[in-house]
Length: 252
Image 1 (tube, rainbow, N blue to C red):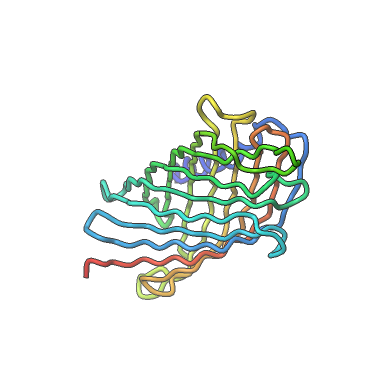
Image 2: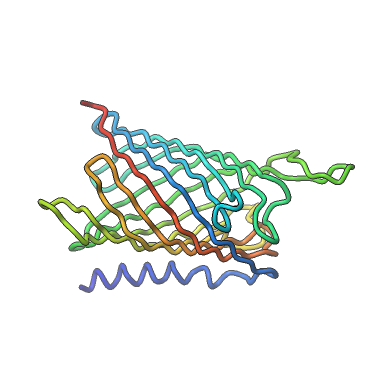
């Protein structure tokens, strides 16, 4: 019980961390819908390939918010720890009023990641730390008044996520239905960190259902907070995310 209380306090600490950031001058909100896919592919006893992709919409399906494609190579260092290297391509669209971006903005980044998983009674904990080396498109105004992406700026971002899964329904000792609770915080670091330490915070709660050993569905509510680079705009976005997750073993 004491250990479970310790981990719950850590989760609550992460939940509250975003409150400590500087207040942005303008606050806005968008009601988001995210369609999300994760495909996990086991290649050898220790080596896996993961492909993640998402399409995100703001204010229902009325505006495109963002899409990304994220391949990675994962290596099982121990039973509890996985190391990963990956690449992500983003496009963030012009959405909301006011908008974070003047035009649709591309971003490419490489990242390294460590994922640690452990069990405490019926609770399954997942801790993920990712260091992102980002190249973000910069828009400049042309002589005709229009904006164009003319350069890419390097930025460094650190992400820490903690998730807790709790089984709700089992069938023949296999979990079918489970609950999800967690948080992910995005931190600007390095010499070009912008005007605010926090880039994003996501409070996560939902349920998951294992269709079989290869296919899983998740439905989550996410409270997404975003602070722009200059800390002049803050978004507070209630978000629904529908995830489809596959897990295949190609060694057979």
